[in-house]
Image (cartoon, rainbow, N blue to C red):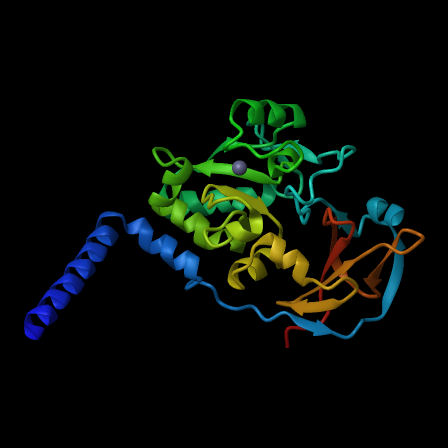
Length: 292
Ligand SMILES: [Zn+2]
């Protein structure tokens, strides 16, 4: 009797294993999604706190007018907790006479990403949803509240999120294509993240969207993907007023002082400053340390 039970158990285990293997053979993208969920492709990026460098004070007015500083919207956190302010002005521009509008911080990066897809997979990366005005978002939300975010809480209203696809593989099907899996695993190399990752619903409030890419720029995309974070977790991890060194960059998240000024390292190249939509600004500069 005991022996029989053992055999039944063994048989059940073998059947289960076979079923799992069959599912993964029939639907190879499940392997991929399982890997993304567990972060098996993530290569931890150290982000070290550094001593406060010698700084100069710069007013927000100076920043927006300076030729040496790129002032953009790349690191705005947009969700139901931090919706876009009523007076928000999206900084969008048309992408190569295509009628597609995206935030002005990202056309160059998007061009590189779509060229990589074309080169590797001979596929054209298309955009099904680009910049939406607040009115368009509201209209969408009224017709389909399940898929459209509340007005003010969608990245499409800042032109920072893009819904992408390749022919025959749109929406969730995007992940079933080689190009879709490439975009999901490698878009960080081009400054993008999958904004609503498979593991992030408890943080983002939004289920997995393998088709919605979001520009955040370098080195932020690297840190977010490789440290297996959501944008929410990343922004919260940056202590206000602290300075961090990561992958040849210096990052600091700051609240403007009473005079509306931020601190910039005394010596810097390629400074990028973006509001984060929580009342702070994120300063990103190339560190001047030589690569040795
Ligand atoms: Zn989207």
